[in-house]
Length: 371
Image 1: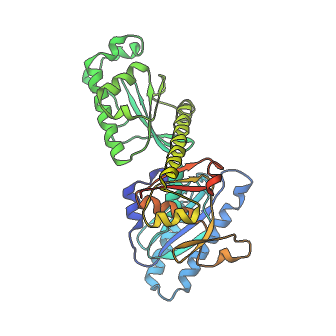
Image 2 (image 1 turned 60 degrees about the vertical axis):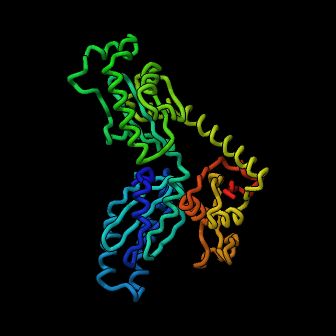
Image 3 (image 1 turned 30 degrees about the horizontal axis):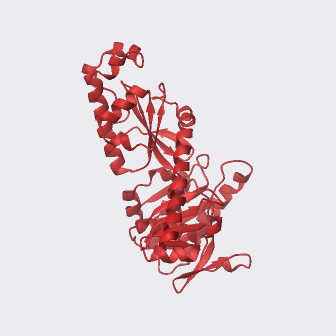
């Protein structure tokens, strides 16, 4: 599964306590040669390490060990390294297994516990821009799911949508964009109202920024048909893209997506500056960690590639450089930033990833506090 498939409901299910053992494997992967040559070896090593740990654990009954091993073997068989991104997460217990492809590098790790390790998945999902692209014409509407630098068509929840056949005049296809009456026809209005209703339901289940694409009259009528379209993060007045293809639509919509990202970054920096003036501001890994754990953080801003190993002591973080081998000890988190992001989201905070060096003056991470 892609991180794009992670919904609040799926995450809640993944976090539920499970009968011991629940196994989580994370492996860094690489999209291109020659770095990807070692990916299969790393994956096999992680798999072997998980089996070794279960075999050596006297608290695991034989039946449970056999069942989990079978699920892990099935997961290994399903891994498609041609589909890989920057990280791979395998989850398995006695009853199920899941394979997740992550758009963010993950450390090599094997965790055997009574819960799944989800922080890498959550951090990757939070870091990667997820958005919707709603593409409309007078006779067709398609919905596309954006995941960082790619799009794929969402073929569910009423999409793709077309007007009912009994109300559709096929000759109107020849008039799309040429005759104003196409967009004043009451049947077209009804159709676009139904599109707005269907998209509203999608947003309720998977809230994300969204962008509208279509000729100007179609976009205007869609906004007039309901309230959802008015909150779009951006619009592209261009026709002929309802059926993509995905790479063409992605290229067309990227300037609009980038513009929104720049606006979000400007807004985030303004909120941080305002928080400093009101003394509701935290900066640096330890300060932000404490605020997040106390659930006082309303917004957490972190540089995109900021990672740090650390151990927790008396509620505070002690950074670990790792060059002396200390990072291998069990009480050290390979990337405490991932855990911080997961905790922030759990506490209802907004998490925004910014370009590298934007927060250099704040030690790469900062927060706006609720109080």
